Image 1 (cartoon, rainbow, N blue to C red):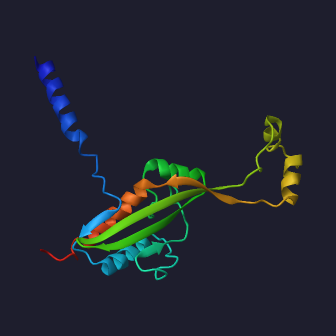
Image 2: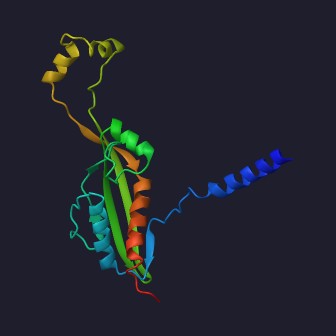
Image 3: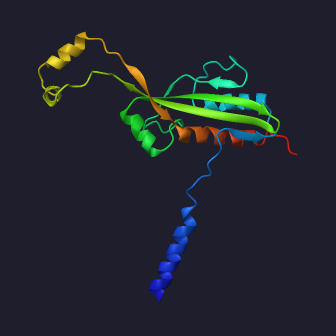
Length: 188
């Protein structure tokens, strides 16, 4: 009897705690009721600067903000907040990744609407890997390998490859913006 009561209590606690780790997903674009579009743009610029993004052209067009690429934080850069989640920290530790943020702030009748798009890219050096398993073993040879001689002379052409959107960072930026705008919005 005690065993059954313990199982029921444990199951109830597990179900009750299951929702605690989930966060509410914000709409993208996010409607900030009662917010001024100009003030929202200034706050959005500040949020991006706090995340260490360099704003590329803040005044190029009213209501649009774009940033330069920011290299992702690796696992030992604990003070940086631009990489969200353990998986992305591990990925940034093994691959050079960068993120670009584009924001559009539109005035609407109810306030301001904010759209955030974060694109993630990975740095790659095409055609620089070993062509066979035999060449891979020769990389660790003490003598200068043929592959090393070839690479020493040939130029390396690095390029950024688009990996897709970073929705976790988009949600984080929207949440930061909403937290900062809510106290500024006029009360009805």
